[in-house]
Image (cartoon, rainbow, N blue to C red; front, top):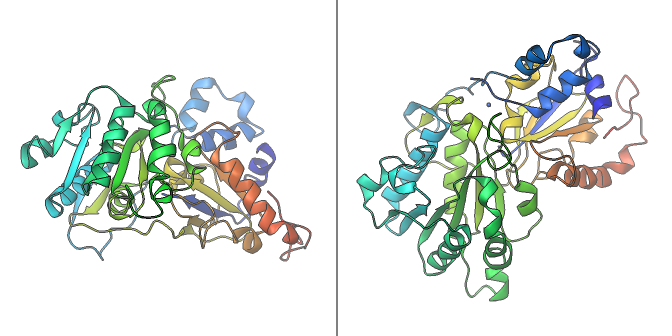
Length: 363
């Protein structure tokens, strides 16, 4: 990691490639901190300076024009807008979870109970296993079930319901029944003061399980489109929402319903030297600017498949290297599995010199 970081920071003439998976004012960024710590001048900086330098400013994307009129929204408001669109269009849709009736701790469901009634937006007991179990039953019965886990850190009591019931429901019945109408939302990632039960990034646990899709957006526009795609998808989905972006990320978001494909990469910026792979907060474009990453190629692989078409799967063949950044433990996190899969498929190219600098493939 440090060697790759030194490679990235070697000078302005380096051209890089960024890949963002599925998908940040101020936000902590572990990837930015890693690059900072690799700098030879890092030790001369005070802890306060280092902490400040590990923040970045969210840079909005250009205003989308293909989805109709837009409105200024932060990320949590874009989530509310997506849920509002769903409840308005689908009379079977229900939203439930701890404290969602009054708007939730992050205000993502504010006003929806008053607008659609207490039978469609309602609180549940403090029981994550029960929340997901109820959602599975509702989805199997034909409802569009949108469950909220108050924090991603609290999702573990529901682990069995998700990986052994929801993920396998279609398989165990030979496709006679399924709970594809189930979407599970949860605030995700750290904000710098959440401590151990409000800071975790558990996506790797679920991304290794066939039968469910795991999605993490990087911006308000992406959040609304991807959430609506999850709700419409015929497979159960877990939608992790970077809570540090709830208010920090602001964009012009389309007011009407729209979807963003779940299985296509998003190229954020073109480059030629290395492919960066990231998702959620790590994919924020301004991060590479603050760390002097020049000419970065950005592709956002599928939000639930880091090796989706057009992502980092074949990127190393084009750029000669790949680096992944994620907000989780180093091993065995999702980036570790990505590194093994991409490295295995591109290994024949690792020993072939590439480009005018005669570089070899590097992971």
